[in-house]
Length: 125
Image (cartoon, rainbow, N blue to C red; front, side, top):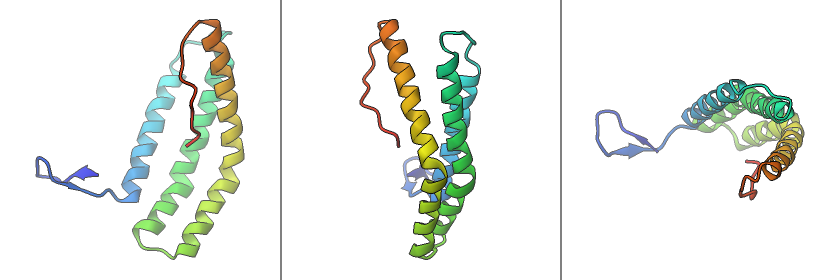
């Protein structure tokens, strides 16, 4: 939901394209923060894995997810939407999952070493 321009409390549903644009903005902002982290031998693999994960997500959002959002927003045929979603999975999912698992593995080791309590009930999406 988003606020309707010119109102204080009236909301309207967001178009899928707007949701994807927000996701792109969030991923880019987080990627910038990660890239700005100081380099150290101890965290290098974890930071580089996180950067790669964010880059994959960003690539998918800026291309196929924008196309999928357009199909939904314009009422495109269900078959086209399903094919586009399948294309996204085929192109990105295996790499994304592998990087995600690696990042969690590295994060758990780092947290254990530094006695950092973390709730590891993570979700990939």
